[in-house]
Length: 112
Length: 116
Image 1: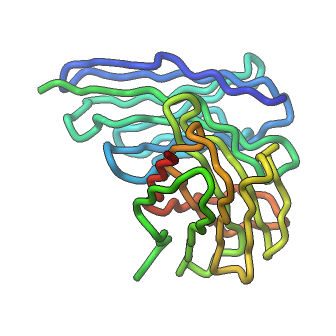
Image 2: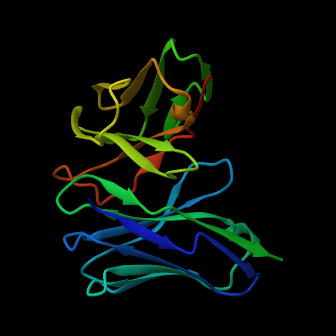
Image 3: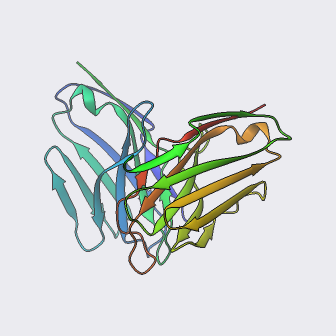
């Protein structure tokens, strides 16, 4: 079945540095790729998403890039801040179905 | 209450008990979901309902039984669970178009379930 692999599982950066999280997927029919952020003890929340008809999308300090040929997409956070510390989940919408497949998550720690 | 609410927030039950989890969304959405979140599988889809119809059952054991009486309410009935079912159960909703979810899923706060 469809599988989404997410790397790294943990990431530690200094405040102000950039952070990159990468996901790969297997279903060539997938066409929607959201990223969710889950702070400790809180619910997951969408932070950015991208559809397969674009290669990059930016929203202030966060950006997502998509390479459909290689079947991978990445989350980029620039000028990281302590409040960016959380678990980040990538996901892909299984082609033709109403079913999001989530990656295993990346625990990001931003140190002041 | 706004957004997606879940009750109870915490639940401890024995393996022979029967209990139900409740989810309510106040967003006017037409799709609702149950997810299981545990250390082994961080966000695992269990069930999907579109327009009150179940459109996805992700190979979930029959001891979990969902119910969607209307587009605002979703229940998860629990019966003879196992200790490995202990997890955080998250409900979510979204506004779907033609039964495909390109829109944001809004999650509830979850029910922390412990099976003894």
